[in-house]
Length: 238
Image (tube, rainbow, N blue to C red; front, side, top):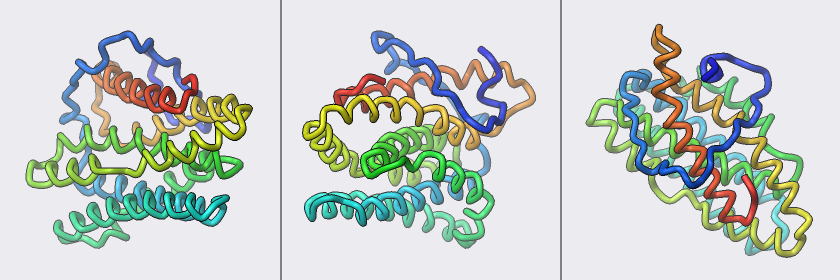
């Protein structure tokens, strides 16, 4: 496997997805040695949730119906609640959330600019796919945190993310305009590479990059499989 995970690039190409017939659910890899410090995990994941809340709030303003606005408001509230849960853990540690999140703002803001999408439907796809992928990743990464924090972080991130509401809105949009499906499928594939780079930045690399990549590969394979299932749920090809 190439040193993809440990190289910074201006643009990430979407990796080739594994076949869904593989028994990905049985893969469990210990990431404890690659989990960075507590405040790194809390600060980065808290700012990601805040960014997701911002994206969903922006989508509310452009929603075509009152019902869509209501569904998006509900999803945004769930993201804000996750952010607030992580911020509370930062304060519990004796730090201010804004200061802990600050080192991650530039990279995540750039990620947001590159993945927001050109219209309302692409923005919803971004919220659904990147939000789910990163929640899955940080839930796994949190297993390497001190136990008194790990359980709470996992509880926060593993909670309802409002994805069912986004799926309903996207499915309705595709049903109303079937030509939209191919564009959203392409957008979903494009999102994977950029999202994986954000996840990679949440890892603490050791001196042995080859060994690190061997350990990380099955984790990302599992995450891509979950991404593929999300795409399948919309009737799109990943």
